[in-house]
Image (cartoon, rainbow, N blue to C red; front, side, top):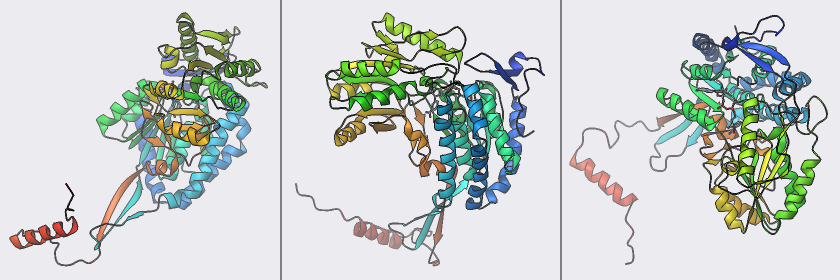
Length: 511
Ligand code: NAD
């Protein structure tokens, strides 16, 4: 069994906790049902992947990369089919499914396939003292990587990690989110169609317990993406087993709007940055600090642009689709309700839309204060809270007043000033005059500070993170013995001391 297969909802009765039912969040329609993998099944999947990985690791990097491109080609060829499922299971629009999921994963595969051989080539280290020795670091696949994924980007996140891990020579067992399991199984179907070793990449469906079982199943590394709360449990479980863990966690991205910002570009960026994917992006604009001199005009523009957004069933021509998960919708409702009770003003939106489907109006809140939940806790929905600030320094201080630090944004016409502000914002990535997009630039590191991440992904170093770094040192001269070996004697001690003084002679310092 390469993957746990979905069952058609007509053929099989629903099984409660032993299975997961996937629904279309825009219509409520049942799309399918998948089994919940037990810990034995997870362990068996990891064992099969380990066998397949041994042969795969022996394949030269360039050949691995070439073969993984067949997977990319399968995704590209069957793009409409994948987009259709992303829209139906994830609630996102067709443009988002294409631009934020397929394009990202296909480009990432191409980028790393082309460069992997160079990135993973051994790195020589020139020893600064011991010129008679030669060192280098080489990169060895870790073995089987467990990927645990969230529901907001059910294709680009897990498949991006999977493709990088495969190119690096690993096997992968993926535990997708219980909210969007069918997309992962579709990915497995595409993978199986392109001639790669079947057991090398497997999908185990299930809830949190299945994810926990994956960590305990003997995998050699975990790449986790999800909430801070789960990330802490995952990191602790990995720590217990001393296996490396990359954890990509929550965000609360601040946007600083300077007095000299181009307000038209800023408003366009903020509206897209807050509402794309119904605001369910870890990098979403989650709080805006607008300079008092431009605040009112900025709000006017944002509200006008928000009012023009078309929201509805994403199978049609809309800008904003459905939210993906009912519990997230409840969180968003609660955040907005609490903010209003605490004095925020709803400039537009503010409520659920329609009787069926999980829609929340694209919402703009003004008169927000830093002490409100809506400014402090992740919203993960289509809500843009805005706060007026007196100076850019105030904005930076407020932006940094957070336990999270994934992405941040600065808007100014003065790029040099933008760069200076960006460097003071405590986030893994800060963009000047743009939002969100760098997840789709695989050469840049996807990294968070504070509680937003442990480790990082993407970039050349991100590919190397999926390998063990091993150091080899070769003696070039091979004399009979080194000076620091036995026997110790006054003579060698004296020579070493003289060497120390010669090399590290203390400089005379003026008083
Ligand atoms: P979540 O933490 O609830 O679940 C993530 C995954 O972990 C799911 O597959 C879940 O089944 C699994 N899981 C749950 N408990 C587990 C356990 N004890 N051990 C192992 N696995 C377990 O997160 P979510 O609701 O799916 O995703 C939303 C969150 O993800 C948001 O906070 C968002 O900011 C974050 N996110 C971060 C990034 C990033 O790159 N930093 C990207 C996307 C989403």
